[in-house]
Image (tube, rainbow, N blue to C red):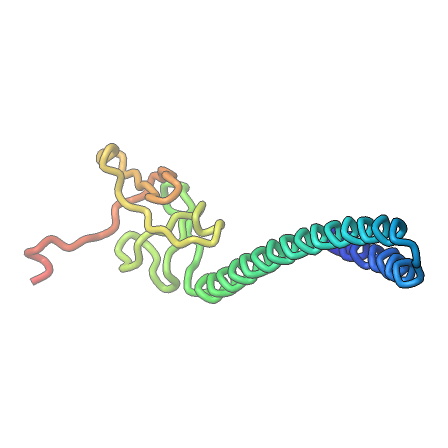
Length: 159
């Protein structure tokens, strides 16, 4: 669209140039007034086209900056992605954990598979409403996953 508008703006220059030549060749006051009115109208149209082109350019610059930020964010996530491994638990749930940390006795928390696929890292927390069946809830996407509780030492065992 911007290219078409740009070509249209350039196409208005030739009639403006031709009008300028007619004005310089005119020797009648009435013809000069008529041509001056046409020149003013074309100048106003050219200014409006320029404003449209500037708006389109500004929109394109904002979109470009947004896309660059998204690409940079995706690249950063791809670098982090290598630190996580997909794990299938005995409940049949698939989650992500830090590499080298598997099983319920591991140090790594469970990470939401849904958020992970959307390039977000969100820890699954034990759901308060479901303490008996060991469900975990993602605070970001609200996914509920049945998972074994992670090992947490009691205060007596920690000392």
